[in-house]
Amino acid sequence: MLDRLLGLSDPDLTAHFKEEGITTTLFASAWFITIFTNILKQNCQDGVVNESLLQVWDQFLFGGWQSALKISAYIIISHKHLLLKLPFEDILPLMPDCAKAVLQQERSDLLYGLIKKEFKGLKFSFFISKLSAEFEESHKEVKL
Image 1 (cartoon, rainbow, N blue to C red):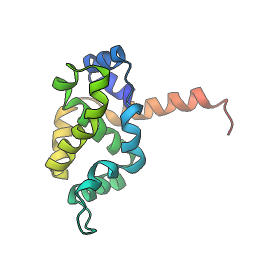
Image 2: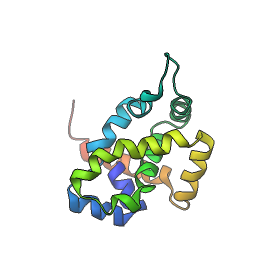
Image 3: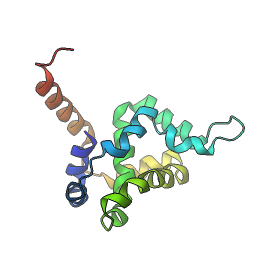
């Protein structure tokens, strides 16, 4: 779903990723599985959890997976100028640093202000609902 959202919000970056054979699952799966703990855990000292991580979790608990998708899209797009210049083998190792740079420096309220500004006019809720419905439709024949 993140690949599709990137395609809607930044076709140039999506085209570059496609050209390089990159899908967001190569790096963003870890972000979603751990809700960014894998990125921010390095700053935990003496068992005290990083404030940025707590703010991301608060947003996740409040906004659900949509908030995680928005954060992920913002992380990627905010580094577009750099990512467009790099080949596959340089992009993947850079992505954790891109996430750290965004999540560590921004307070949660500032981060969401930046996300709103970046995606102004793009109706994430609408697109996420649409993409979810497409996924459900395409997988309704599969019974687990």
